[in-house]
Image (cartoon, rainbow, N blue to C red; front, side):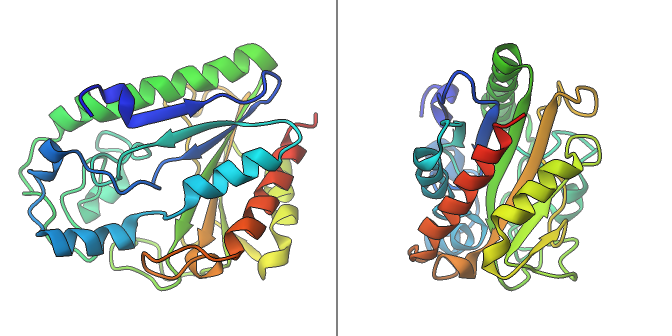
Length: 266
């Protein structure tokens, strides 16, 4: 992808929808120049992509959007998180730096070398992270201008068994984990998600993954921007670690559509 803006896609929804379904980790695509900086051989890289890719989540978001009464907007990362992780802080605020997994990863999910530890993350951040952040900021600003509010719903998945990189993986691993933010996730938003996903064996909050993505231009300052992370345990809808999707994907997409439709209500 010669143009960094080709690395993500904003799929328009209804003008009156405040919701953006954000899909940051669904792709396995790594441009050739970026692949050259990764030390894993091809087989090891494929295994790492199996572990870290939120497989089929772009499809899940698309099915959900098609079922919504008011179509949400979708912002989809077209590159692997092994290129850059758009949801990390790009500086020392990022706690995953301790695991070698800041905005630019240097370690794998199992703690092995992915890139040399001394690699300069600047070029990848400038080429891929910064344009992504600007575009996501503009997408949220567009929903605020059109509707007076914006709600970012992150669509993720996570493995049923803890991976070594998880800093907080010792807690519960519910079928659906809801990641929240103290400023941007009002209780009503969490409650709607709990209701929508109640039929999958239960939901939990902020375990094993916590927080919700908000572009930094709005983070902690603009209460008109709501955010919630949906982390779906992969055994609900696919063959782990990197296999095909099963019928659970459609059922989960229907639940996500129910959530989105509820968020359109004032």
